[in-house]
Amino acid sequence: MLVVIVLLVTVAMRVAIVTAVVYLLLPRGPLCLHCGIEMVPLRNRFFDRLLPVLQRRWCLECGWDGVVRRVRGAATRRRLPRLTPST
Ligand SMILES: [Zn+2]
Image (cartoon, rainbow, N blue to C red; front, side, top):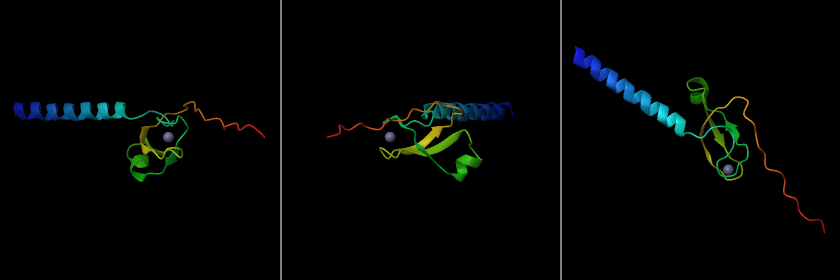
């Protein structure tokens, strides 16, 4: 019986470690990794109900979409509009 408990604890520890590593590898915050602009949040029932710490986002500039870690009160950095010389 002790062997079964040790094996179950080992498997549970592996799952916990893999979950923590995957969570830490996800990008953090609403800013795009490529463009640096704020991405648009996408509604996803799975993440909204079961994993509220994660959020699916889509970048309008480069088209990247994926799962990011949700950050409360994160500072946003928006790209300034390009200035064109007036002729
Ligand atoms: Zn982008």
